[in-house]
Image 1 (tube, rainbow, N blue to C red):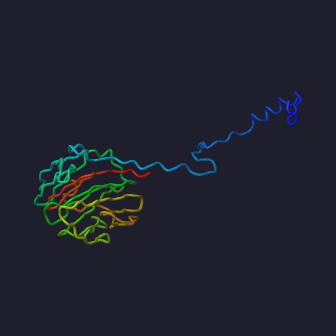
Image 2 (image 1 turned 90 degrees about the horizontal axis):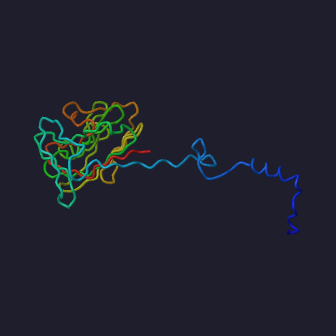
Image 3 (image 1 turned 180 degrees about the vertical axis):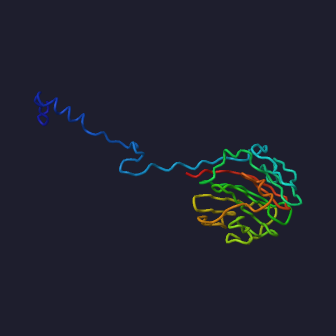
Length: 238
């Protein structure tokens, strides 16, 4: 035996063994309260994204019940080889409505899609979506083709409230459209430009009076305009 480590007396061995067993065990796993060692919270869960258009059919969607509803179809391939939902031009509103309300979140989520104006002079994307117990419409290119904003806020349309902006929308071009709903805030983007950053606390959010209610619980409409839609996605936020 090495002279540096002499054998311990036999009477001490049980006491040392008991002390070793009583030592706390440390590790890198989460603690019972969900925190990691050192008190740090666990990593946030990643956002979950879901496709709402399968590229082949209108599964999950139906033509909206507007009085002026025009034909809706899936065109695959569309002009650039990808699939698209085509909303034919009508005298007024035409669109699609989501049929699976139970699947929709009402807070902490994002909706995104790409939309193209094919023919017409008014909005080619009126995205109606839930915000808590209410709903609003993000109008892209309304009131003659340029107005962008949220309808309605405190009973005012997108053309008359503080979310209203003007933008020139070119035909036959895809625009990336995204809305985000979080507690106390409503945000929207066109391409990479944020066009709405609105604090919703103590503000009345509701739909415009009239047929847009047929877009509930989630819908995409066009007004006197033929439009194409694709890449429709829902992303739940952590």
